[in-house]
Amino acid sequence: MTIMDGTLYIAVFHLRRRQSIIVGKLDKFDFRAGMYFYVGSAQRNLSARIERHGRKEKPLCWHIDYLSIKAKMLGVILIPGDRERECTLARELAGIYELAVPGFGSSDCRCGGHLFYVSDERW
Image (cartoon, rainbow, N blue to C red; front, side):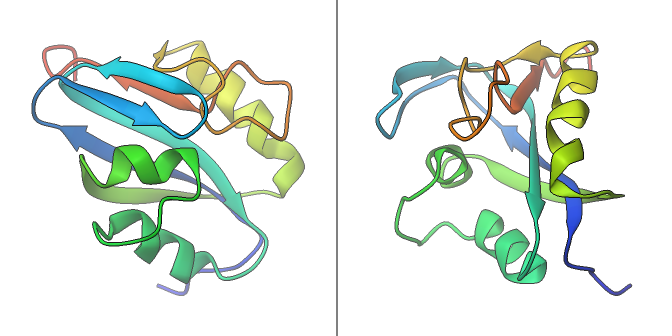
């Protein structure tokens, strides 16, 4: 499969146990054990971005970095669409899953957040 730039994605993470994690300048949050879905987009270097999400050793720059060093990335769902649809996709997930952290991944938009949670029992 060829990974195309200018694509939306949902990175899927699993956190085995509850942890308090400081997320950059946002604050310290209690992350429950379970599945996390992060909505993102990449206009270029999508392969490198996805690979970065899966790495544990990296400088912590983006909100997702703080979770991804603690949780296991299970995979990525690629969705055709441009960056403008990223927030629409986040709103669609918000209608299905619980917002994990207010403002997570949405510092450049007006969304409530781009990270969603579901417990292991519900998954």
